[in-house]
Image 1: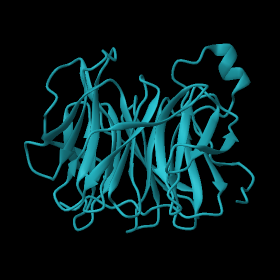
Image 2 (image 1 turned 90 degrees about the vertical axis):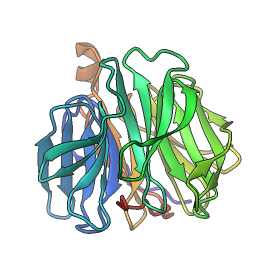
Image 3 (image 1 turned 30 degrees about the vertical axis):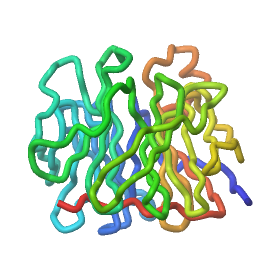
Image 4 (image 1 turned 45 degrees about the vertical axis):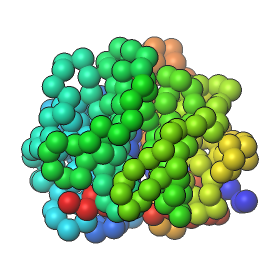
Length: 286
């Protein structure tokens, strides 16, 4: 595999950049600043960027397939955003000490999101599925900080990272019914914790190592195939553009002044040519 030169795609100071996804309606990359509740739409070809503030923690946003706007996972649960205006449709997390984290749509357009407590109590995190109506469905419990999600090209395996447990897991997936089996440990990393991830058409996972200054590529059996060193200590998530370029978000949150001076690009978005293609990520179907 021929890996290109790592480049800065968007120089920005995001507190916690997360959730990159490409919008097939516009060709733009959409992503979020989780801590500040910002939703970005970035026209990478023209260098134009639009930003909306939703006024709440924003874990991820997914373009809608048949309607304007986006489906979102926010502190309160699930909602819809049109022209920057948030409507919390499914307030499944009413407690002030919980929030949604990362989210992604499965190949049939259902949104899956992980919830967590603000102090990351072990076993209090969960995985939810939202089909566009309230209430959403609680799908898996006894997690801590559920993070990067994805599916293989055949859509018979789901991947999930539990960052505080330091593990990337997989489970059997029933696409027709939107059901999952038991999650099994697949891979761990030696430095940092697994955060967001993307899946390629070769059946491999690209995992952002928060605190580890790297992106790791694992094969379907969990074997480490490749490591890309990053100029920031907190790469947070990644997504494939249609041409196979991998885009990587990062974060500044929690870094002291000395570290920020040493990492002037912390919070920026990076890109790198990979020589492969990503499994397409579906839009929200409802």
